[in-house]
Image 1 (tube, rainbow, N blue to C red):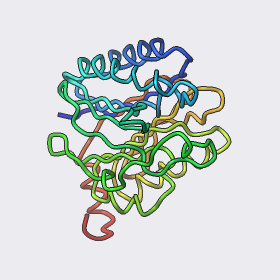
Image 2: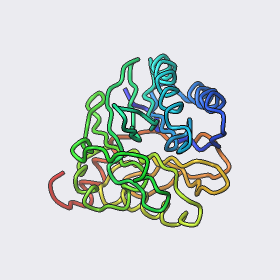
Image 3: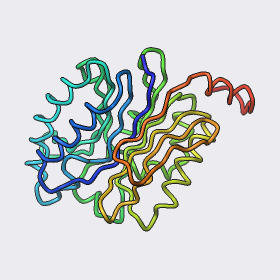
Image 4: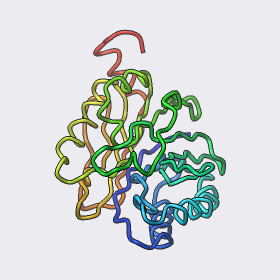
Amino acid sequence: MISNLCALQFVTANDYQVNLDKFTSLIESSPKDSIILAPELCLSGYAYDDMLSASRFTQKAIKTIQSLSTDKTIVLTMITKSGDKFFNTAYVFHKNKILHKQSKHQLFVLNDERKFFISGNKNKIKIFEINGIKIAILICFELRFIDLWQKIKGADIILVPSMWGIIRKEHFETLTKALAIANQCYVIASDGANEDLAKGSGIISPFGKENRDDTQELLCSEFDPKEIKKMRKYMNIGPI
């Protein structure tokens, strides 16, 4: 059951355990039957000078987050390692299990992400279901690629975990709202609260109504699937 949509917006510190403790606290403060979305790489940051340690910490974090997902669905991206290659991987935890994984396909050019991470499989960007609710994920920079919007057309909820720069704050807020309107769905957008980041986290309804507040670490809205059906009936743009 999904009753609430929650977007987190907190500062990522240099200490991985401090970040996990903060994340845990916010999860525990969230209502039951929520989907909770964290900012991109919120536990480690990009950690270019510490990738191996960050990937090892991911394994520890997985166990902690799994245990918190009994009655909540928890989504975040973490640094993972396969062989000698590193990935920026989104995890979906549900009922104490890993329900879905996908690694970031469109790596960001301006921060040298392509030098440190391997691009994920584009085919993993797809709709998956939780209790009949159709869900999809676009990781940060992927939000800019309209062909990916089409790829996940029909999703009821799209999650956008991000580490979006403050100088492009308006882009982040405009694109996430446009995504909700264009795909006639709910969008949960989560960005970090560090000084160089946009914040702008929030929940956007299929009609484009926004719940955003840059002063809050936790934002929640009720999930009403009737709003999706109402919007798609009101503004028929073809089969979804």
